[in-house]
Image (tube, rainbow, N blue to C red; front, top):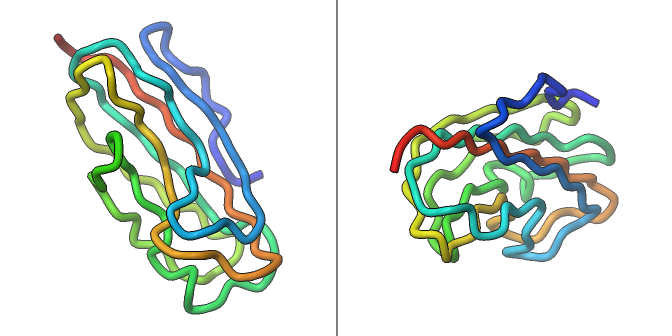
Length: 121
């Protein structure tokens, strides 16, 4: 699997998920209501299998609740890993997730991981 399996800091939350031909807006992976504070968030994603089509270009997005924070500049190259980092403040009631922007192509496997490291209040 091309996604990182590096050790995660004790102050970090992380999760991993996969989906085949996900629906538009589907959550691939979620961190459920992290405690309020500022987090450094790292997302890693790829199309792990299948034959990606034009629908897969840019089809991953980091969200806080329902709001898109960052769209991933992915392409339809199977197995190509993409990584993005950003700082996000959450209020303790919001999920962080990686979702699709549109529907995935049949047989294409989406893989995503999210790590949120608390860096402040």
